[in-house]
Image 1 (cartoon, rainbow, N blue to C red):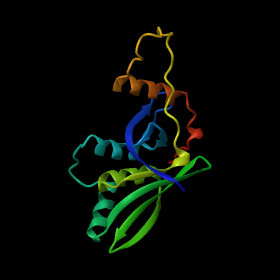
Image 2: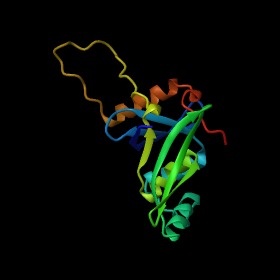
Image 3: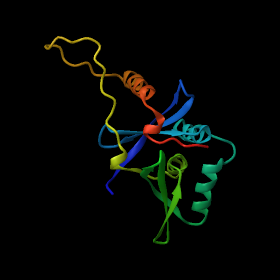
Length: 174
């Protein structure tokens, strides 16, 4: 299996279905992986991304604290497969040279990786090309192409995701 390192590119609340979608994007390219996740996991990921402090450890914080308390470290997360509309991931924990692979939901894995500052990898076969730029009228050939701002890219991605069927990429049933 070829894996590609990714980062969390964003967290979106899809307006039609009120579903949370975490967007993973490859570090060295443009391909993405949208994953529909539950509200609890979305909140856990959002808190880390926004560096929002919380007075007491939440579940994902607690898990990382326990791992570290056992003198171990979360070394990486791998989202490896999609079967029957469900993504499969593993959290890799290392202690004294031994590595343990733990089956986990991608949403929990991402939240743990962000807290443990561990890299996230995705099976290359799961990555999708970025949304194509929509043509809104032809530009004269002599003009340089318009470079999209981050806001325009986010809006373009939002429109792309609204057209997708969650079952095409996997969806977590809580």
